[in-house]
Image 1 (spheres, rainbow, N blue to C red):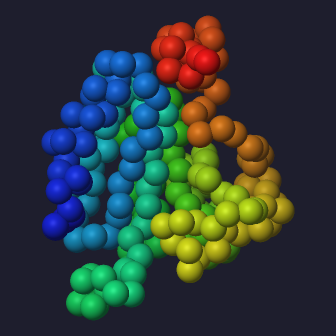
Image 2: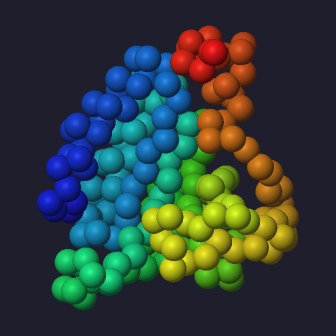
Length: 189
């Protein structure tokens, strides 16, 4: 489905994720949903990510990103539809079931309506991603982030707490984890 995108060849991407696992580098991956792939292809991709995580334990998060056709692109010009919320929700729920609780599941809150956000939490996300009150979504600048207070209220109504975090999750950065020493090697002055 990533026609004309040589850097998105699944075998190459899985190899990079595997190599990161060997090097004990916490890794983020994801699925772009609604680009012409089938549900079976999504399930296969999630299963491949699960196997890499089982082997190396380094997959810190999987972002489930709904496709949005951009003006000036071939898919927009050909009238390719945006990913439906139902397909996004189905994929989030499958990601949670396949990946289990040890992998964080993320969906960008600015690509769904505010009234849909509780459904994403119920389907299994546990992270809203890089929401920022000071920067735009650089991939989807036409879709502003929800206000932090609004997102926090929605999250709390569903029984969760919105907390800030660094790009790497704490369980991958603590010095006592298998990743702590490896990360110090790369970030030490």
